[in-house]
Image (cartoon, rainbow, N blue to C red; front, side, top):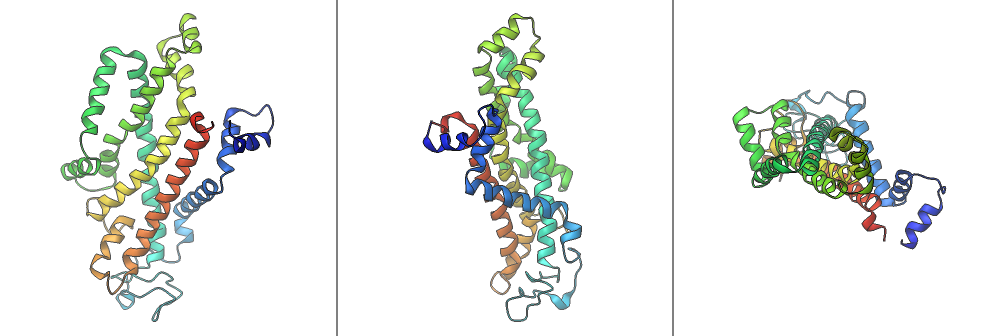
Amino acid sequence: MSGALARVIGRGHADDSPLQRNMRLFFSSRLSTASTVTVLVFIVLAVGAPLIAPHDPNETDLFRRLQPPAWMAGGDWTFVLGCDALGRDIFSRIIFGARVSIFIGAFVIFVATGIGILAGLAAGYLRGWTDVVISRVVDILLGFPYLIFAIALIAMMGPGLQNILLALVYKEWVMPCRVVRGETLAAREVEYVEAARALGGSRRHIMLREILPNILSPVIVVATIRMAHVIILEASLSFLGLGIQPPTASWGSMVADGRSFMLEAWWVSTFPGFAILLLVLAINVAGQGLRDAFDPKFHD
C-alpha cells in the first residue's frame, strides 16, 4: 500500500468500512473534489433553473439580436453572456440547457445500468445458452458506431425527448453488462458464493444478495464515466437537428444556432460549447477519481 493511501486511511478510524475509506481517499484529491463540486453546481443550476435564470430562455427580442457579452462594446450586464440571433438570453438558455443534458444523461445511465446489471448477472452466473444469447447481442450492438446507431434509430422513430432516451438506452446497456458479466464470472466461484449455494440459496438470492453488492464499485465507476459520453451524444444529436427540438434550450442546438455567426458573433456557439466541455470534463475527472479510489489495483 502506498504511503499516500496509508496516510489518508490513517486519518480515519480503525473500524471504518471499506466504503468510508474509499470515499476518504476520493476526497483527498483536490482535483476529484473540485470536479465533484463542479458537477454539483451544474445540478443545482439545472434543478433551480426557473429561479436562477435571469430571463425567460425562449423570450425573443430582435432589437437584442446578436447582442455581445456585457464586457464588450455594446454589451449589457442584464444579458451577461449576450444574446443569440433571435435576441434570447444565452446565459438563461445555458442554465435551462443544463436541465436537458443532465436529465437525459442521468435517466439513460440509470435505466441502461439497471438493464446491464440484470443481463450481466444472468450471463455471468447462469452461463450456458443465456450467456451465449446475451453475449452475441452485446457483440452485435458493439459492432455499430454509437452515434450512427442512434441517428438511424431516431431517423426511424422521429426526433423528440422520448425517442432520444430510447435510442440511447438501446445500446448504452451493453457497457455495464460487459463489466457485470466479467465481475460475476470471477465472483461466482469465491467462497461466500459457494457457501450460499451449499446452504440452498436460490439463483436469484445468490445473484442479487451475494454477488451484486460485491461488484457494484466498478459498475458505479463505469456509469459515472459513461454519463459524460451520453451527454456528448445528446449534444451531437441536437446539433444535427435530431435531438431536442426548438424552442427548448439544448446545448447542442445552441452550438448549431451559432454556426452561421462564428466570425461576427462567436459567443452564440462558444459559451454553450464551453458548458459542454466543463461538465463533461468534470464528470470524467470525477469518474477517474472514483476508479482510483475504489479499484484495489490502484492502491498498491
